[in-house]
Every structure is written in structure tokens, then in C-alpha cells.
Image (cartoon, rainbow, N blue to C red; front, side, top):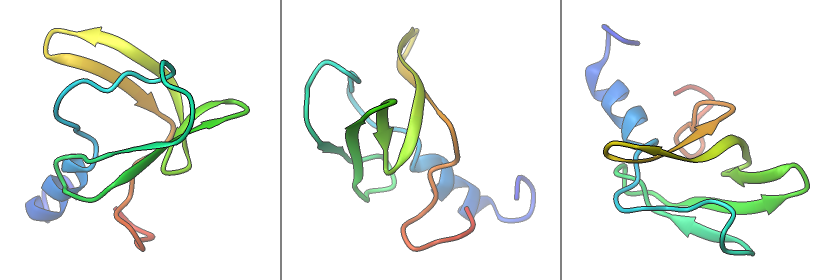
Length: 84
């Protein structure tokens, strides 16, 4: 995927980047975020922490030079897709 289909890779990466600042854990209840891909991802509290589209967030709110990083446990795949 890294060399074969750049458009598909670009679309996959765009699903992992959200403009602005999104803090995880500060606001209770479900909410949504819109990544650069333009679709909507659900951010929901769970017994084991917080999940984004059902994927656990392993580490959140890591401050970086250009924003915040949230470490997720899997690739956030396109809606209805079984492959990235």
C-alpha cells in the first residue's frame, strides 16, 4: 500500500488527522469529530477508556509541536471497508 496506491494511502492518512484541538477525556458523553477525510468519527466513553469509531484510544492528549497526538489501537478504516 505504501508504494502501490498513493491516493488510497492519502485517504487512509486523512482519516487519522483532525484540524484544531481535540481533547480526549475532558468532556463526558459521546461526540463526533470530522477528520481531513471529511467523514465523521464517533468519540465515545467506554469502560476501558475512550473509543473512536469503536477503536480503543490507548494514550491520549500527548502534546506535540504541532498539536496533540492520540494513540489508537488499530487503523481507522473507511466506512463499510474491510481493508484500509
